[in-house]
Image (tube, rainbow, N blue to C red; front, side, top):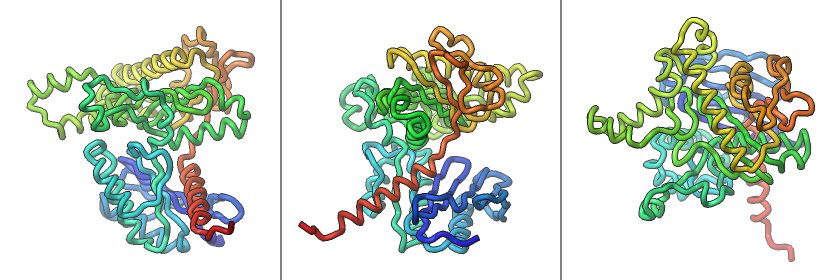
Length: 401
């Protein structure tokens, strides 16, 4: 297969894996290949690569942690032509409203935010610096998950603490913004601007899970807050938690900040409820014989249903509901449980369409149209990179007037 000319590579690092995609940029964005290192830092990490139109190919991985990132960087350097740009997903972007070119000043600004997001930013900054050293001639860009939510009204961003702490940046930021950007763009592409401008609830349900209420193409509210641990229960994260529990654990369990952060991010959520796994597919399989697994699934669906109802109230109506993410796009029993009892809002599922994972799973004529839509954060990142590069090159042109 002929290698692409002037490719853009996207790097999407998470707590348990790293995804990449390589796009041809001449004549429009076209996916050339993609891949993922799964179970990063685990016992048996897996590296898979898939060229467009071909099956996935396993690649060798030796070592753990940062070495896995080096394996990916080395593979890209060996197998891909010199990239025009690398677009890096940055979960915590604070007040950045759009993608930014990465330079020493931006890195310093992000370093200053590490205390707000010790779960993601240190690893992301380490990856960015590694890839900048491996591809020094390429332009590197940061694409922020928080940027989508910059349109939220002030009331939705407010945290009810004294002004002293709000002035230090403690507020609700929201995450999964690259995914929501894609879903909104795809709704408009498929169904027109009228649908995309309507009253929407977008549900990104995966290992990390959140919802966003959107109206006129702008985020009105979202379930994650100051950190991605807020909102819905997730694979290993608590979601919203009574702050008195933190005080209680500090007093009775001698728990410091590091132990508490690990508890709420890595040991709780669906894993904490089931006692065995936070993986939704495994929980569904075990539910028939394992009451704790069944309880974890039921609790997750109950909480998502509550948030949908809350956002229907915030939007003063609901026209479109979109399920996405690894759970939302793949687990029909979860979608059915969430939507059961929401007929008073106009949500009525077509059982056959839901079971087969069709694009629209609501009954014909129902007041709320319900969609199943896989997300594509990497495509959004690549498009943002191309747009920023074009704008930067234009700005660099001499004034012709």
